[in-house]
Amino acid sequence: MMDWLFDLLRYDPQAPLLFVDLFFWGFFAVSLLGLAFLQRKMAMRNAYLFAISLFFYYKVSGLFLLLLVFSTVSDYLIGHAMHRTDTTWKRKMWLFASVFVNLGLLFYFKYAYFLADFFSDAFGLLWEPKPYMAIWSNATFGSDFVETAIILPVGISFYTFQCLSYTIDLYRKKIKPVNRVLDFGFFVSFFPQLVAGPIVRASEFLPQLYKETKLTKAAFGLGLFWILNGLIKKMVLADYVASNFADRVFAQPTLYSGLECIMALFAYSLQVYADFSGYTDVAIGVAMLMGFTLTKNFNSPYKATSVSDYWRRWHISLSSWLRDYLYIPLGGNREGSLATYVLIFLAAVVLSIMSDTWLVPVGMALLLVTVYALARWVTAFRQWLNTNINIMLTMLLGGWWHGASWNFVTWGGLNGLGLVGYKLWKQIRPWTPQSNVFARVWAIAITLTFITFTRAWFRAPGWDEAISILTRSWTAFDASLTGDILHGFWKPLAVMLVGYLIHWIPETMKHSYRQRFAHAPWYVQWSLAFGAMLFVFQSMSAGSQPFIYFQF
Image (cartoon, rainbow, N blue to C red; front, side):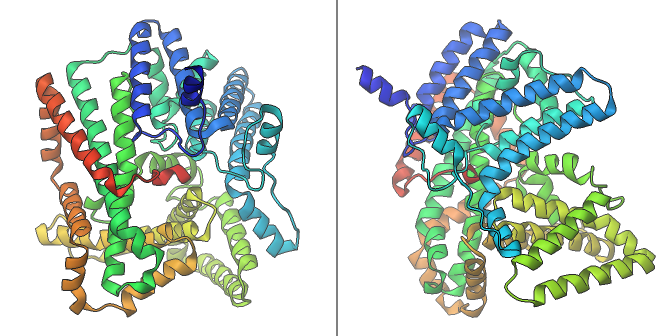
């Protein structure tokens, strides 16, 4: 009996805890039971939720739990040290300490190999990153971490940004420090959103720590709806389309026609949305059942009528974080700051050094000289550059946040170009998406197509593979194969069509049926929930896949 319990509670790297596991829902039920006894005792409630969140992260990521605890304690202490002084240089010093600790850990675990390749190519320095934490953990605790490679801790990009939002807002004097370290730990590690967002701002979540949790019938119904909605998105739409179509084409695009490659790109667009927003829906629903509100992270992004509109709807918590903590401090759309031009120069140097041909550094040098000359002597160009350079830099860094790969940098850069291009088009376009239905549909189709084709770099394992599937889409296109393709892949393509059609349902209608479910009698809610879960488990034959954003 004790061995069984130990096996149940210990971390299993082959079976991390996921929302799609029955064990998670047992864990959640136990969590709710404990919360019911502590909901009026806020200090004990927060400490309890911090403890179960740590257990959740242990089941997801093992002894990387220690890294989460270190980040939590260090930012808690830094925040209090910053708050105790009004001396500007001391406050800046403590802010720098927080940025150094958080980004230092993120860079080591996420970008060490990327930087090692750069140092090798640029200066001939042979630096081999070592997994020091894994070596120490294995020697100290007898764990079995891999000692031949640095493993990326699940969720580190998300909780790092949460910690930074806390210390930056403290520096800006927008918030006051959390009094108890256990309260701050609960904010950083709240398990529904810990490993894949949404990224929670301190200013939005901290006030909830000191309010009594109340669960109304309507809130329970709405929370249950979001959980069911998220599971259906993930396990019916995302996993089925991936396993039965998208993954097959991306694995060997040269074996498929151009039309199949195009369809696979649109399939992946649906997959990544259903996968990521599905996780977010479950996280929001679980938090709601516990009496807490999480940030809205998606707003029907494939209804967007422009790239700018798309980034106001997609991964809203990251987009707004980059806007408030990177884009605006760099100068926003007013002007490029010194930091902007330093980062642009460094990016050009890195690209030049990493390239395999002398044409890249020469081209970069000519580009920088040309841009400088135009900005120096042409007022209109200088104003345009100041307005747009921070957009490009923010999108490039946003792409790099997703992973240490030129694919992600390319993806971010293309979206930056899309934003800049849209601003130019908006000044000369003869109509607007609001002109008529046709104009709106056309704008949505163009935006979705652009976003979908940039995702070739997001999905493919390397630059060459991304170019391969895009090239195949063009060179091997044969409309005469449409009938055969529809016949051979009619099931996943039908699921795709249903997924997009549901996505395009008007928001007023979606809000209406959400509220109807939330206010329905309990027996109606549970009957629908039982039917939905039967439907979900019947669809699991395609195989459940890890959440895509766990890798970030």
